[in-house]
Image 1 (spheres, one colour):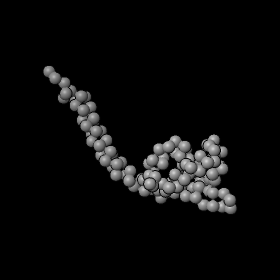
Image 2 (cartoon, rainbow, N blue to C red):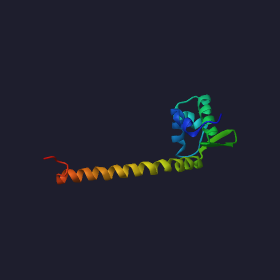
Image 3 (spheres, helix red, strand yellow):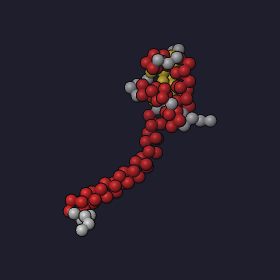
Image 4 (cartoon, rainbow, N blue to C red):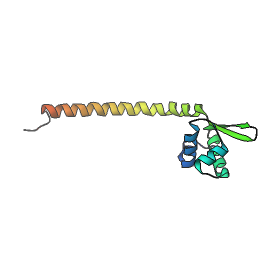
Length: 113
């Protein structure tokens, strides 16, 4: 079963690995050192991130260098954009409604005699 991007990022250690890789490629050893993980644990998390298409690995001599796949995040951004538009519209309508209430309150339209 293929791991989804969402489920891969839901695990805190994997999210921390992604945060580390935002600043550039790192070897497994560098990741384990910075996060205080054991190598097998880090490798397991990196495998999940790789299966989800979030990172890619390149072998350099006997080291494995991991880096983020920016395309995965661009695809997520496109998917999220549809939700952003819906919520922006809802917030715009809410803002209009609140401004109208404020206007009524300031002119005394909503006060009962």
